[in-house]
Length: 273
Image (cartoon, rainbow, N blue to C red):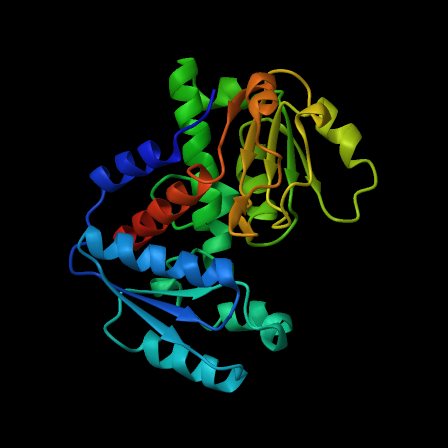
């Protein structure tokens, strides 16, 4: 069954109020997908009454940090740094993110916000993509008519991403529901074996078309976070076809899956600031 991310996002928008709140998105990247994603956020934010401003910054670390510092003391409600940064700034990502005041951390990527994933509750700021995955699991639980704890208990969860932005904070939360969580990365040698035994797969490599229906077991849950543009097509980590739909019990499509829920989760974070 395909999970309709747009419908989940719609529910989130109906439950929040961001009218008049100011969001500043800092673009210090030329990555095509990231630029497009930033303008989608702006468009959606303005639709629901937020005031969204996009600032383009050159490949200058000092200028970027100075701008964030200025925004911390401005009347903007929240700040987002669109990732990934320019190649020359990549190694400074953590330092730059930490410059954001926790009181304005819409994306939930400062260490202060990441700490919320150790004792998760829905009214806390956590990374928007992580929140989106949780929202999708909550939708599945609603369909299954069970509690989250009973659904996740004893499940093998494979997260193919070990970053501080997605994999690690998501693992913190899912382990609180007594699931067995495995964090995989690009150096994991037996990824195909792990895919075969995983009940729930959350894949966020950012590469596109890495895995196929044949790689997973029947009736698994596949949450495909990746959305990359190749030859004018949006691709996920999985090759999305009829066989993948048949083999999975629940599947997030690309596009229309995790992406819309992540944007909605971001604005939910904005509503909490």
